[in-house]
Structure formats: structure tokens, C-alpha cells
Length: 188
Image 1 (cartoon, rainbow, N blue to C red):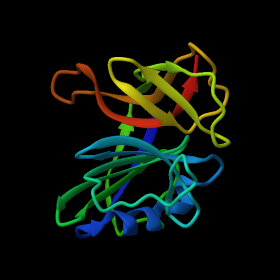
Image 2: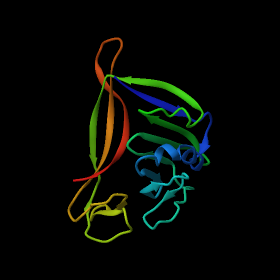
Image 3: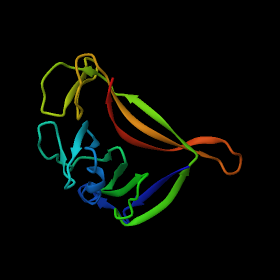
Image 4: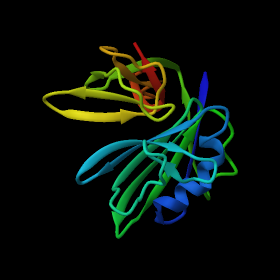
């Protein structure tokens, strides 16, 4: 059985503070990736060891208009949702010990099993040179998006990988997916 640990902020905090608090675990062993949602865009960024987010141009990402973030790597995922005026609740989940991050522990999930999951991102790879560690996906109907991944070539696809956690219902014993954690990007 796998245990999924959870931590949360004790109150609503700015995204920058949530990222700063969890930067060490998100940049540990592998590059952390952030998926940012704003009213006018959906972008990827790279999580730095100080909690800043770097865009495809190598610049620090402005977080003022971001309303939701899922920042992740192989071991952990940070979720943040803007509730009001740039303040929101932060939640960190991981299969490793995260007791030194955020302020409050949330109930642990003991999973019966896990399922590896892949979600294809819209667009196909382009044969262009971009800043190191980035590729570009494009499709005429939807435009383009830069993705923090290497090895992307023409006509290749990028998949967002995740782990789904299964648990049996205590009353009836039915097994269902009760949680999902993003873990990376993969070229196919």
C-alpha cells in the first residue's frame, strides 16, 4: 500500500509565498514544472530553487494575473488556487516526507494501488531551435504553446504524465480513483 502525504497552508497566501515554501521539494532531483492558468493564457514555466518561475524567454514569470497553478515533479505536486486578491490556499501532496513544507498536515491517503496515466497535449512538435530545454507545440486551430521539455521534434506529441491513486470504499468495497498527482512531461 502506498501512502500519499498532504500539507496545506494554514491561511490563504500569495502564490509566490507558496512556491517559495515548496521550492526545495519541487526542484529536488528533477526540474519542477508549473502549469499556470490566467484569464488570457495557459503557460508552462520551470520552477527554480528559490521558488521563482522561469518562462521560455528565461525571464521570471509575473504571477499577478495567475488564478491557478499546478507545480510538479516526479515526487511532489503543489496546487494553488486564487480565492481573492491574489491570495489562495496552497496544497502539497507527495509520496515522500513533506513535513517541513507548509504549515498544516492534512489526512494521509493510503492507496490500495496506483495507475499511471497520460494526457496528450494539443499540438505537434515543431522543428525549430528554442531556448535550451524548451520545445514548441502547435496546431492551426489552437495556436502554439512552449513546453519545458527536450527531445521534441517535428510531428512528435507531448504527454502530461500522472499517477492516479485507488482506494476501496469502506462501506461497499468499490474501488475508485480518489486522487491524482501530476509527475512530468514525456515526448512520444
